[in-house]
Length: 446
Image 1 (cartoon, helix red, strand yellow):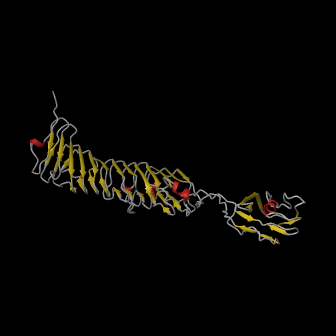
Image 2 (cartoon, rainbow, N blue to C red):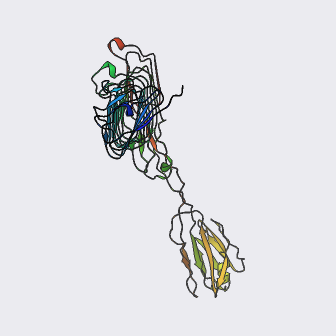
Image 3 (cartoon, rainbow, N blue to C red):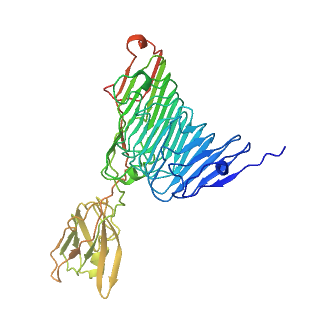
């Protein structure tokens, strides 16, 4: 026997009857914009049947529309999507509800229906359902699961752009939350209203992995609180920042402060593990500067017998008449703290001690003879080298150069402050179930 599948496209009128009843194969029903209406009655029959809804604007699943033996409902909306498919009187056999695009997504499903949401640009709210999977990449939006009606299975939330958005999960079995780009957004799992309702405590393993947002220069980032109640085991791992590169050049370094962590065991919680990044002291970046030694230029004049010229504390007394070039030569190629220079006794004698400079060779241009005097160390521009003379031919002069102090570079570091961790065993019949507690890096108030 050949089993033939059926493809049906809904109309804007009433869709029911044999034309909208599938057979033994996998039947596909398609609802273009505004065609799924309150009086529609669709029957899938055998096989794995599906209904695909496309809405250009906001979409609300008609409460009186009937879906029978249709296993998969897929919705793609251009605005808010609201769907309550939990009523057994109108919806039967639905095992998968998927929203692939929406603004807000507000969904309620039976405990036998898996729920998947992705592509939402606004808040996501899911009540009921069996296994729930949420993938979100829109910043600053809230995610709530089980707030009014808890689900029957696992909850998996991947929020790649949590920022200030809050994540809240009540009930369920195994809970896995992975959040990135975290700023002040919080994570609450189990008994989020504080009403101590036993059903609000997840029964399976709870795993939370969160990563703080990339470091922004001169901006502190205190991460939002993480609160967990219940679970068979609780494992929380938080990394302070996804990217600290900007801190390396930040001259006003700031701290990223880990969340405060509050964990309360449930009736069967046996272990709790909380891991944070290692603490680090914030360090301001300093830009390295290459030091430049100040170079002054000394211009000499001719000297008569017994006249003196003093440069940087060293005095030369001429034994005979000297040209300006010869006078300059007496101060050429000096080392710091020199007590004499290269001039011969026939030309003159020295007294005093040369200061913290070195000098170069004589340069003569257009009849002007000069010697450069270089400071021994790099420093900010200082007073010009001291010169004086008793020459009648004119005055020895000095022109100041420019110096720059050397600065040792420092690579900036983002500060990391560990958050306080509070762990409480269950109360009443749930007391004394915790067997293992592991903390890696934690605040002083823990």
